Length: 525
Image: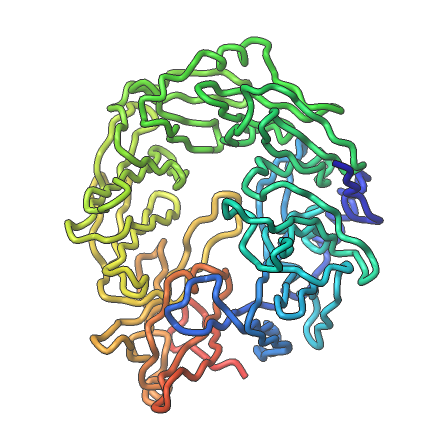
């Protein structure tokens, strides 16, 4: 595979950390905010036909795009430590999108305040979707985009679908309409990690394959670690305090993978060699794990283990073994003292429960139990010691029960709202994003909610505030309830509403708000 991942000022391996720091220190206005409009209020996050960009200064829509088949994603600022370890994520800086009817790839900078100008990238004319965006550096303005293309059947099947002949290419944000895309015949899900240098520069793509592991660096050089035992390896976490190494799982072993030099290597010196002791894997083949600031925690053989930044493996405590059909260590959430584990069967979900595991004693306690009639596993969001549990009340993803638990209290979760439609979610922009605010409205039997019931909830304060004024509530009356995936698809204090119209369909409007200010909900023109 011949790749060339370098470009002038983008992923070229030069140390531009001083330039990045200088740019970050400039008093630039906040970037424009992106809000999507969906075909219907119950559509999932992938089915949208409208993109709006809002100026945070004027509060007005300064650019819109409407098309039947859109796919979009953004690049954002990233902060790195001295080892190349990502430690923070900031606001979105650049939009990438595909209009599938035209088949072209476009980009729009979110910097500035008015008159955005889309720019076509590459010669590609059969693009299907944006699969992933990868920063070239910490500024967020320069990035690589993985784009899927229609295969020989001219259909957009999706590169992850078994039997699909869709192709994947790499496109750079600096490319022109005459630049060719770079062929990258690898499924996006095979990419383990996108490492960065100590200077915060994108180093290359690291993925797993049937022969082992491969890294293509920014010079276009491919580095292979040919070892069949590493095939289909699973990325667990970057090594704490070292952005040039990662913990990976391959079968029943955990390895330390290093890419600091000119090739991929496994660190096999003590104490890293201890990791090659086979795991018992009594948790039905899945290893529950959490990447925290002081190490990688995981459960195996009825014990809670920790791997620290020096590759030292410690049995922290004995803990009841987790032995269910499905274990979701994917929450990978934690507080200062406890780790969270979501257990549930594949179907039905009635047995779903949220467990808190002590980091020191290994003791488990149930903080939330799904109701017997549950048709979906709960969604768990965390802010420090507080966990918010969102339990679907049906299969439409439009009606929810919200529960809250303060883990430091030792209590179980309490229900704070039920029968609500989630309109918006806001999270912090650090590595382990914390849910800061929820916006919801009270659903009725007709599938709508009164605008008077729109509430902004501050997670840390445990306070809900009405966001609509009395005048606005009278004018707008009722909105249709929406799919929660629409609320979770952005991180801006803005959303699209859907008002039913007598002739059928919906009237869409865009709204902004201040999450902690009563009566702050405003129409965006």
